Structure formats: structure tokens, C-alpha cells
Length: 290
Image (cartoon, rainbow, N blue to C red):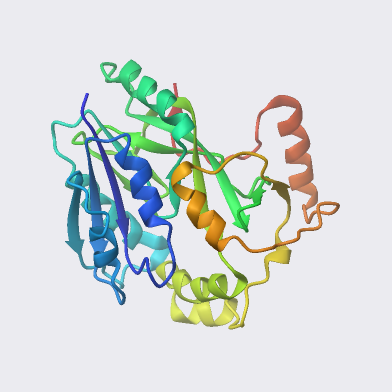
């Protein structure tokens, strides 16, 4: 069974993405990893090269910054990386630059890929998500966070990145038929100091919105206000081994008032139903769960 990882990144140094940790978490699972490195304003290319792994195939790209509506450019760059996955690969594992796999989940991922390798009705494999927020000590637990997404697909069968690269579809705009694995992606996109997060908000939003929208909705500030979040939980587990040094060096103190939340009435109702039944009302599902 041949397994290839793929990802894309640009300006990783400027925005301090844990992309090295992300790629390292793939290298232990994959025969090779395709990294689409967009032309950057910093030394992102040098950063990726510093991994110095014979498994890594770097694909240098140029982003089309006119594709701003709905984050389309992110899907385009994802497709460039997916297209570079060798045709003989059985599975392709996708991570974004702020997503990391935990080594404790490797056995479940390997077992799932092996189990469904020959079943061509299965287009991809679905993974759970854990979204960290503010510091490495908190995770989001409200319905606003997606709890599952496709991260393993069959290459070379007409599968492509969908919308802003959150998930995938296949030719005919069809949802992928997937199996759920007992494995979790650790998402660190919202873990930054308030000043760094504010810089990201003021620039990254331009991948989705016009300058006029940004001027109206993103107010320039010295620091991002993390207090507006609806609900959080303390994280009681362990971070992936490849993240341990980053957590030790960069974690900062964030104190969230756990006695209150900012749920709207309909979200409170959704949470009650979810806790009682395991069913999440109105959940976005860009897949067909087999």
C-alpha cells in the first residue's frame, strides 16, 4: 500500500504556522509528501527545505491573489499538490499547514487505509477534529466548529478540493462516500498571541473578502479579542509529540471564564440535543457517511 501526503503553504514564517510539525506528522505515515510552496514574502521555501527529508517533494507555485471570493485560491493550491501525488498511490493524506496528526492515531489510520483499500465504493476517509483556541490549553466545543472532515482520499479518480479547501468533492460535484476513522486532527489555526492573531485576521481575511468588506468588518487593532468566543473547554489530553517543543516555547497564559458562555438560544438547544442523542442539528456535512 503506497501512501502519499500532500499540503500547501505560503508565508509560513510570517504567520508562524506549525507547518514543520504538520509535515513531520505526515512523514511518519507516508512514503512521500508533496508540499506546494507558494511564492512568499519570507523564507518559507527555505523553511520547508530545512526538513531535509528525501521523502519530501517540493512543488513551487504562484498564488492567484485575484481568486478572493470564498477562499478559492486555497482550493486551487490544494489541487496543485493533489495533482502531483503519484498515480500509483493508493491513498493521499491531506493536512493544512496548521493541522497536525497525533502519533497515537497512526495505528487507526493505517488500519483504516488497509481495510478500505480494495473497496472502491469508499472514496475517502473521515477524521475527527479538535480545534484549539487562543492558547494550547483550550479547545472550542460549540456548534460553530466543524467536528469532522475528509483528510484521506483516493488520488487520480477525479477528486478535487471544494470551496475554500475545507473538504473535497468528485467529478459531477458529488459528495465523497467515506468511512469514519477513530483518529483526530489537531487544528492550531487559532492558537497565537493576541498581537499575532490580529495580524493574521487583518491579512488572511483577504483570501475570502474584498478590500471593501475587510475595511467594514475587520477593525485594525493592536491585539485580537479572544474573549468573544462562545464556549471553550480545558484541554486535558496530550499534544502530538512533534508539537511538544512548540507548545513548551510558545504557549502563553490565557484565562477564560468557564462559568459563562455566549450561546445563542438556538445553539443552546442544539447542544442539549447533541449531548442527549449524539446528533448535531444543522451540521455541515460535505460527505456521504457509509
